[in-house]
Length: 430
Image (cartoon, rainbow, N blue to C red; front, side):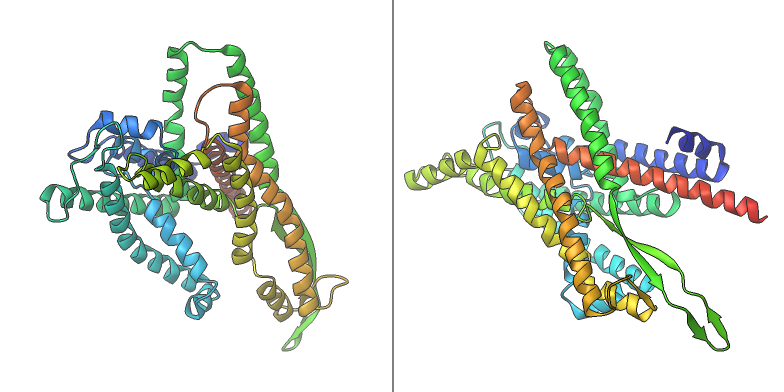
């Protein structure tokens, strides 16, 4: 991996791409330090310290929410719009047809996703301002939200403009740089929080034994993530000889790669959002003057305590379920079997058509067991590690952040190696 990075810097065109990405990441981090007008920083810090839901949103905003900056929402609306469009592509006939039209269809779906991002951004900006304008023990972060107030409208349009700017930065990185721009922005926000965490650890009374054990576990976790993320089941594909016009094309052998974890980090996002949302809503009514409402709210908060066994078990089971649900949307055995049949391909020992579809469905179901268990362990491991090491630190979102960081690094290095290989081929042809 280090050799590929060094060789990439030696190639002028690839070096320019890497420096371009680094420059835009610096611009993004600069924007993440520019706060929205009318924000109380101390109240925001107190609120984020004990709110797992906002910490999750802070990760996917690239760290912009921690300062309530102009990019506080980051790419959250774009991610939500992308997920909605991907799910709709499986049920809306028009979008299904577009998804099969190659590059043109993908461009149209991306365009619809950008259009959907704007209303999603307005909706999320309204939710942010309404949430942060309430006094939750540490004071209100912003002034009471009023749709007729010039200050509130300024804050809302600032947040929406920041989201559109962030989306544009991500697409520019994807087009002119290396890797996926949206993932890079999230990656930059997570990595930017690491120096502050180390400084806070050193300023406190550090337990070096716990720190060493944590580092060892982190290294093991990274190795496991890389191993599972790169794991795949290769289905052998044989192509029969074909006659076109007066020429005969000999058949060849290849394979169909099926990844163990096809769902990525999406199941973790779905599961933790569903678990944190009820407790977040209930926390608003824990001080209600109505006795029944207050008791129910306190019961929900205690029942869904992030460190409790019910929460951990529910998190694990929901992650398993969403892994199978999302895999069913992203991989369709019937379409794959139909494409193989149209191109003259078949799996040795399996008849084309229905038997191939059933075989692929069985294989995907079996390998998804390993992927689901992997994501489930990633989801609950921070809680278990925190309980064993007795760190007292809030590691609730640590597994998701680690999975994102490792995935982005691995995918970026693979693209760098592909760029280097393509460059070598071009030099060989010349």
